[in-house]
Length: 360
Image (cartoon, rainbow, N blue to C red; front, side):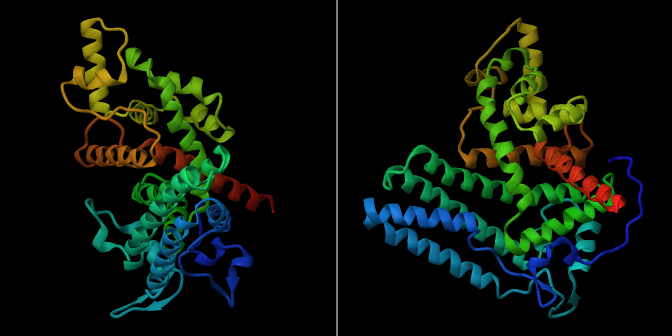
């Protein structure tokens, strides 16, 4: 994909939607309050609570009404998918895509983002917290079985990855080494995510990343050898085909392997180098996760919690470290493992689209 040198013409954002998503020649706009799957989960929980804990229903119904009201309020702001006459200018979706692609400044871009993008992030966080509460209700009061409870936890994690995707898209869009058409696709996906607060690509790959995160539990012995990527390869045999293809294609890339080690060990590239040196110098062959901080002489969070909040927290640490290395021209990974994996998936999708187009 890196060698793809084709010319592309500018196209309307409408082409990124299926025909059934179009209405009166305009794409559907506004935040998706609940997907069909989420509606099913809500109904199932309320039905179970009616039978087992009716006193718990009012609070969750109130929270869902608050979420819906928040979405309606945000919908009052101009759509990002339609031409809009703003207070001082005219904005089109295509112009917004080009603006996102051309922005190159470092630092927090909050004040450069559309209001709808910023407000929508708050909506998504509120929705994540709501579904997390629903997972606890399903477990503690609705008397659902483990499979049903897991469905609420999985939906919570999937939305967390959608929150994370915004950062990943922005990181990749700003990489001028990527093909321009891939960056345009990423920018288009980003504004669709801003508009709807839902992303099908991320929903599809969320279970893969969640499985890899869970697999970290089996990698504690790797703190002895600090050979994270080889351990990951063994774990990957049990993963889906998409992840296995990613490992086979990218394992030899030092940038990717370093990002993998940060992901697996839960410490920075710089801490990994220091720890590896300390273990080699002292002749220590194996340590536990709880000993890492002692050897490094600082507090580090290397536990193997499956809490989605810890996943996002550690992701943001790796993201900020990668951005700092990029800005300061330091050694070490300049992107996170999530950046590399999502790029790989999108490149495959884009290549498939091109092959299908040529086949016609």
